[in-house]
Length: 563
Image 1 (tube, rainbow, N blue to C red):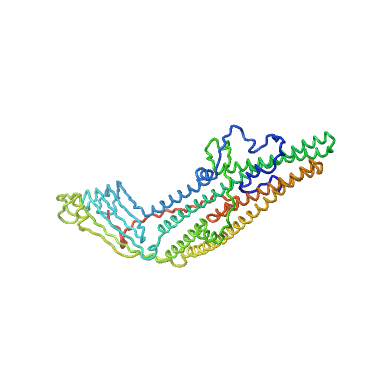
Image 2: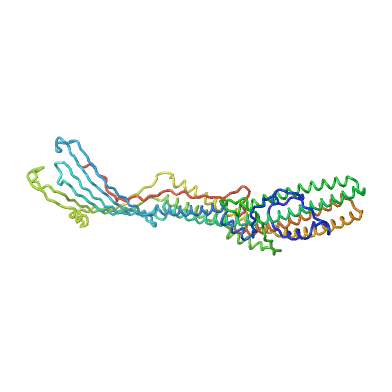
């Protein structure tokens, strides 16, 4: 790793030490400012600076992050799908109002030579509903009509008719325990639960990403300080070498070498500043409101310091907690339950479709009745009016009742669609079970690896801190030897490089330790969001399952009646 490499995520426990102790100019020597560089140091002076605490960064991300808002909207979509599936059990009101006119040609001698004209006003209103239990369907309908006709054989003109019908259809085997509507409702409810789990999972992943981006920015800003101070030391060595060359105490090659080192460290500073700017943009994207016009002009100044050392985590307890409560495992269990529901549904659909059908209809007839005398068809001698009140009385007094009670049976001959669907659903159920086992094994592996990283990075910090202390002592010793004429510019430069590398190693170890802590905490609740992976939304398709109108069972008529 060279002097500018700071990788992944973060912590800044060494920031205070880097500012106060290492890589400082010698006492009494002026510190020379370098020229402008890119990144954090090149920000416009008019930019607003926000002193950002970690808790505030997390709060802003939960409020403003568009990816998280997308998942939150996904839960609302799934909630709407649940309501959609409930629509299968909503009562349906159907009304028909109309008028018809039928002119029938004279098909027999009884109708005369001009045929028959019939004019009809009619209306029908009914309510039907699929029950949310048992699979039954009921309906109630009311119809009324007024018909005028020129048929010489009619007994009424106009004819007033009305009827009230009650009907009920109850499945006895297929569709009784579960039907398409109830199966769809159960699946959509479970998918809604999964979308809530996916949202919580996204919250955990977003919070982890914000913490890592926060500490990364903190550490990379500290790295800029390290590189700037390294440049200042190199520039001071140039001044010393120039004075020695001018007085003939050192060869010109020492000055050239020192100037080349200044150029190299200036490049390192530019790279460090650019990398820090990238880290600031990454944190800004996670927490700032994209609709804010000042989105890219706001400077972020992370002010929190990471906590001290942590105890070694209880790996076994963390694994047990993850296997029970991780959101991706919980979602996989929901998918398993959906697969089991599919198996139960198609098992039921294999049964014979036997239904109990019952209906009752009360009829009424009225209007202007023709009174006839003589032989067929008779001569009209008078009329008798029966109003609509008479018709209604007949409907409810059981004068002309029609009822039916019976069974309908249907069963496919040969291998059915339901049997093939059952075989597919059973395979998907077994796949879902294996997916749970795979997720649990992966979760255990990830958490155990994260725990080892917490331990190893904690030990690396101690080793890197000792290395940084020894590198500083070596540099101070080499600098004093150089001033006494016992060392060379090359050895001083090498000591400076070693000191910078040791400071970067300490910063890197602290970053890795803080990253491992964030990762270990997040992995107990959610899987990591891997490179190139985005928000996953998978909705359930809602199929309309309208309730049919039961009509009862009747023997089909053998012939047609005359109008």
